[in-house]
Length: 389
Image (cartoon, rainbow, N blue to C red; front, side, top):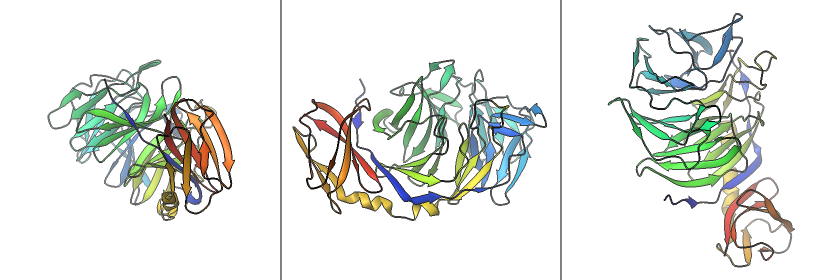
């Protein structure tokens, strides 16, 4: 039986943090969506997707790549045509790009990015689409995804590129489409979809082969992209909230929502290179024929958003005691006036109010159990997990 430890999640909405995107050279296609990307030598490579060039769908006898230094797109011409695939994965280790997944595709295509030679690895034991993948050392980790229509996977595999061996590891707590990143030997599988949109971050410890904890985000996300900057995981776009950008700080469990001027998009990808975040392709409508599918490339400098020490405002806010029998005390250094909302473990709001002169909140009207309290100040909020015993 798996044991899970639930930690509190801090959330901020800060009006001083902004990402100012500029338009770059467009992908040389009418549109490109349902894609993922990889990075090699400051170049962004589109691994897969649905693209339209000169009135025709194109096949993968080439790969688009974007040079972030010259702001130009070019093509990689492999020596063997690649499998056509959407919602697939690609990861770079050394000089090789590993391409895998997508419906019905069990191939592992290995493109040498210096010679363009294509070789093949051991067959992928579970073909799926919209799965998460990330690299740690010489291993690619693949998790979640949709095996076929409405059949979602919880399986996690690692692929050792040196030994060419796939290994089945511990199942995710919940099967779903998802995206993920690795920081400090831990996989963060963020949000996703399995008939409903997930607001969960599942965390897997690579060393112990255990899904050890979960975080609850302030909102669910799906059809989004992820990218990493130091200890921060940026969550870009969403199926419905197309222009939303947030980031999760893995070092202190802070979740931040960032104002921005991006072109709203889903089923796109994003990458961080040299303190800049790049957005690639995607769509904002369901049909490829109604003008809402994109060939857009955009860039913003992360220093614009991260130079403001907003997170420091959170240090003076604590809650005690926890667990509690009846009352909790909200400790705030700067002000005693705040709003609060309390949610049960399903996300239903069970109590709300405003405290002007008192720093205590009575929990006498709710039953024993696990709850989340959101403390709202002037321009940010902080959310704690609490237990009424």
